[in-house]
Length: 216
Image (tube, rainbow, N blue to C red; front, side, top):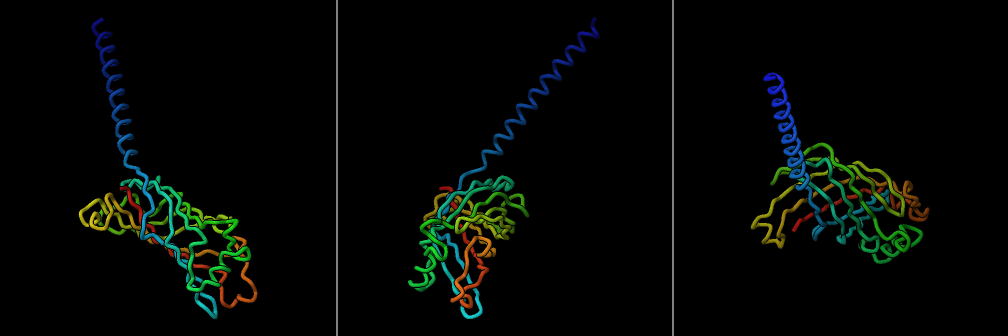
């Protein structure tokens, strides 16, 4: 009888131990997921489009970027979000060229108003260290002219926690600044270069992105 009592006591204690372990594990998971925050695109962000054709090098720039990205700086695995720029905001230094760019024979801003970069994952690093630059690969999809294609983007990311220096710049919370470059093949997005300007506009456009994200 004494042996059976000891056995039942051990089972009860073991059950409590498992229950406490489960509760502790759930509590830890909850605190980790609480680190994931929504970061919004802020001023200083821009998207640059560069065409390097045989006769002409053309650069279009937009600083009218918007969007949000969900990031946990201590665990980058679940990072995701979307940033976009209006096609109508791109400026190339020529009003006539900008008009053609927005027209239905080119990027057709009337039907497809935005160029969009959707971030679906981050590889190459597991976390961001405050004050340091981290090299990562962003996985996602780039959409222009209504056609989306997967992209793999090499990026440099700097993470800064809230400080007097940031507050002096008008930034009340933390800051993440990411710089990335990738190529877009226009025919893949159903964009055809007019034969009259084929020597001035390249089929391959280099996209340079600077994204500034804040929490406050």
